[in-house]
Image (cartoon, rainbow, N blue to C red; front, top):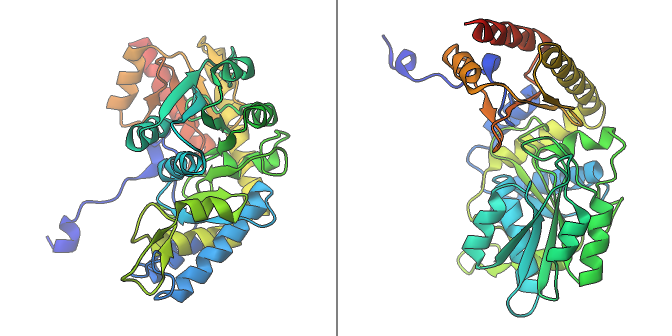
Length: 356
């Protein structure tokens, strides 16, 4: 056996149903390989990948309805959410707090811990969305940031972003929208969630999720340059003299891959993919409901259902990669690699698990 044959193989996606990562678009894969050694963290030394990053950020601005976007391509949603909290803290005076719905990604707990900021979680409503009144009740004069989610990781819900923007404005706070997963499907729905729909200050949107870019390629966007100025630190030994990013050395592969995916797919390719993914989610939800499971209707291409633990363990033993919400519901994310045939096979496995 050769060394190449001894190397472990990457994950096969044919039974991956709960991940928010997917196989990259071929053009993104090719571009990533070309820029494996380029570091966008030092744009003066690596001007080509720096230009690709500017183009990627401009394209992300098109996706989220922002004419003059400021930002960068980083490691993912966690980094972008940390940066949003960091910028809000540094632009405010004194001790501050951040108010987010209970459905917010766990990265906000990391941000609060690392940045020594109080995180206040507000209740969600019966549809798993941020309860605007509950958020308003948690806000006070020390609130620096209000968080909304556009595509929650557990139930695929979209918070009432314009109403949260009003709450933030009344408190003199900034508004951050976490659209890490939902950002590439929401433009093709009727939700009001973008920079164009509300007074959003910063946003997370990840090309390496529904955007079909290679991992890592997460987007952090800001409405104004002052946000990045607040994040910038001096970099005396580099050719570039300042750096607003959280990471120093960053992935040129992620930047180039994100730009290539956006160039290949925006907007028609993403629209087609959203329609397929949403149709798959609605198919799965209907089939699960017909089998007697309680199902949360898929607003976006994510299905949650109350499946017994015994059946979940059985399908996992059969090789299906599935996870659950905090409440124990099965969650299936209809990513680009998820096909109708995959879902039919999963349903068959679930039926067999239920009959044992």
